[in-house]
Amino acid sequence: MSNHFQGHHLPIAGSKEEPLYALGARFETPEALVHAVDRLRDEGVSLYECLTPYPIHGLAEAMKLPKSILSLLVLGGGVSAVLIALSMQLIPSCIIYPLVVDGKPLNLLALPQYVPIVVALTLMIGAITAVTGMILLGGMPRWNNPMFAWDLFAKDASRGFFIAIEARDRKFSTSALTELLHELGAGDITAIHQEASEEK
Image (cartoon, rainbow, N blue to C red; front, side, top):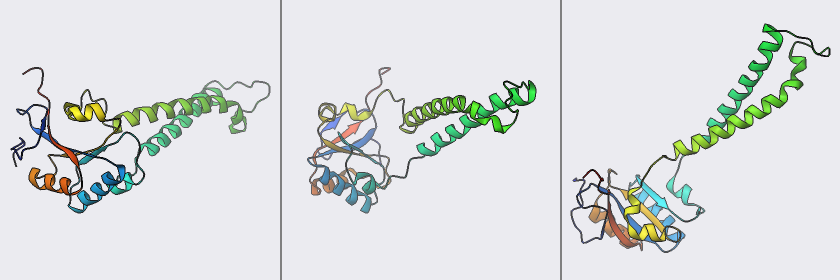
């Protein structure tokens, strides 16, 4: 199928000369959006994005989103921080330059004195891992999203319940999906193209 929009009397957002990015639609209620996602998954559509002004109960389950690996990344960062902090303190203090201070032992019995550094480094590296992982897993940094070429979405993103079905989905068909979205009660169905690059 061509990557360019071929008609079907739909409004067009973005540049007609650029490839079709997605078929966008707006729903009036969160329940209608969740129902639409269920139907789309039943039809075999898998590449779509839901854009809502706030989290919707049941939407993640309807989309069958996998559990994020962010918690594992943070756990890995925390464990690494503990090992690094202990190594930085135990190796110099107990092996390279063993010093007896106030009769404190040169083994793990002196572990409590190393706890403040371990806690501080664990919190710092854990926080950095969480923020960095959230940014990268979220597909950022991304300077622009083709959805902002759609004036309605740009104006009402804080109020409406939108869905964008990507043109690269193997089940993508402009006519079939338009009919299905109409059947599901969607409004403002629009063909969203990539925006023209400034170089052109």
